[in-house]
Length: 90
Image (tube, rainbow, N blue to C red; front, side, top):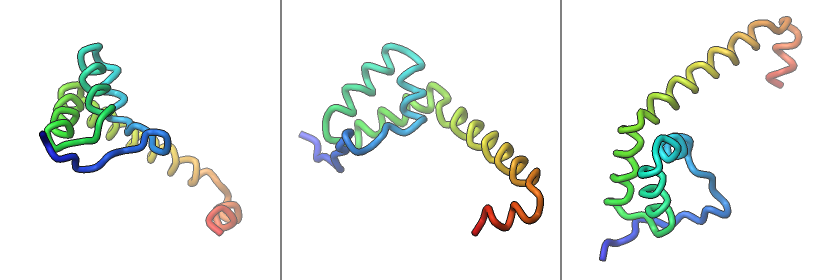
């Protein structure tokens, strides 16, 4: 039996976006991810989830989404008048 690295209490945690994206990519990926997340995580289960994320291009999707959100945030901050910018940060 493999030693659990840690156990996640999903009542208090949310599933990271790359894992959700990978699970949505196919029924087979969903089943594998769901089975792995229902038990304490071991190194093999973490590696399997990571491979499913790579295969589905979940990390690239997450990176592109974060990059787009950062660009949008900077544009919105740049549109504020100087006095509004100062009050926004303090």
